[in-house]
Image 1 (cartoon, rainbow, N blue to C red):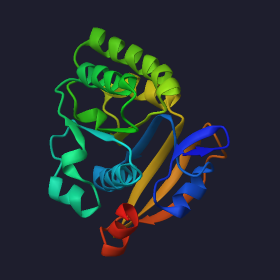
Image 2: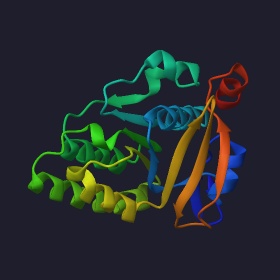
Image 3: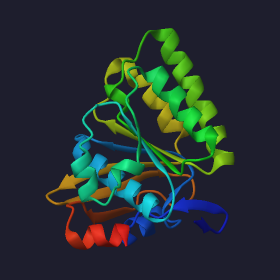
Length: 214
């Protein structure tokens, strides 16, 4: 969807779309950070369902190798239409994401999560950082959104890459679980005013699933 000069992916949560300032997640790199990945992953799956509902294609890089297809189905995802990969190393994951984005066939790529990949040696970390920078260019002409899920606190070996992602991301949000809801605080926003927030429903109620897939 095009909002002004910014192409966005509506999240399916009106309050969050409003907090983001442009009606959804823009193309480019986006980071959701949290102390627990449960809320971020649930929100990422809801976004994937929304993309599918709108006729798009979503990919899920399952670094944790814990993706439950039944849980994905409960939030409206069609598992048979979701592209899933489980790369073992950070460098391989970033290269794979770049390849997927450059194909021009995918609207949303979720990486769950950065810290669960084998970081490799310093040379591989350097190459991964370079790949991230190239990824920004790739998303600019393919209109893809790449959503990285990260966990706080960041371990020391991955700190440099995390800083690179923080710098390159167009949107950076902190996701905090509050019961069956989540508070999403926009920490960085290159397209609108940052430091806004929204509280959204996470639990896969029938009404939410209907809204996502109808």
